Length: 340
Image 1: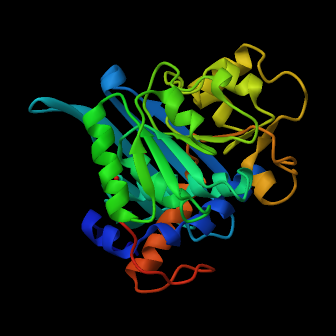
Image 2: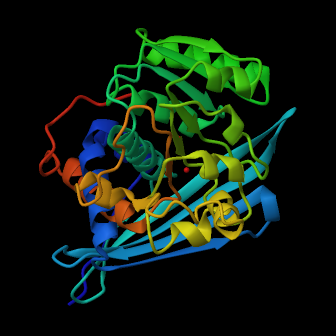
Image 3: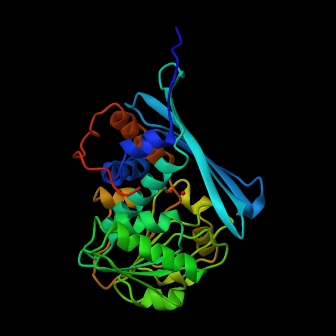
């Protein structure tokens, strides 16, 4: 006998789920992906070309009661004198035994935003030097804010440098970061090179179709976590970044080389051909199957496109939190600051 699915709205989900809830589940999602357990798919649609994309991701993991279907949208809309990206979407959880719809999380992209930032923090924690305390963020959107706040939870960040194409947006982000975390000294850089020069850790969070980070700028010991180029048409890192790196860690051995536009270009150009072993899975590094960074002077890159298993685990955490339960294996935490 079929049962009615429960539907949760974005405001309920925002109140129930915070950033701290998801960092450990994202580590587990990396390990699951590296092990090749279960099934996952990623499809990208572009109904309006560069002005709108739709990401559809599905995931099932043995032993979990549900499978997930996630739809995340980002369409550029006119807003008076400005143009902005309007995010949207939902996660549907279906019973893995009989396929019935169990819950619909109409999160308006919020779970995707949180899990992306949490995954970025987990990747940065796995690869960057433990003493790294200066951070640069390239981009001024929602992910720029979330990823700065998330990185500050896994590294002793004291200063943040913001770069954006629009100075007013960069200054607004800097002010918001300071308001959310007053211990972070935040400034705005005039150029991307200035921002990168000031940082131990560089986060790229743009939707750029041309490189914003160049390998010739990278210095020994720096770490880069790149999350913006999540489809074949986008690129944030030039080919020299990958050629210059001592280790390049990816979130999905199956999907990232095909979907990440900048990584695709680097592989096609032969930038990762030698020396062997520089391309690794984040799940293997987190699970200590791969040694990861072995020297403080190495340059490391974490290249993320977002994996469907993360959406499944994030939705499971959300259901438990919405039911008033703490996430399994994660300490209860106060709601964090409140949208890829």
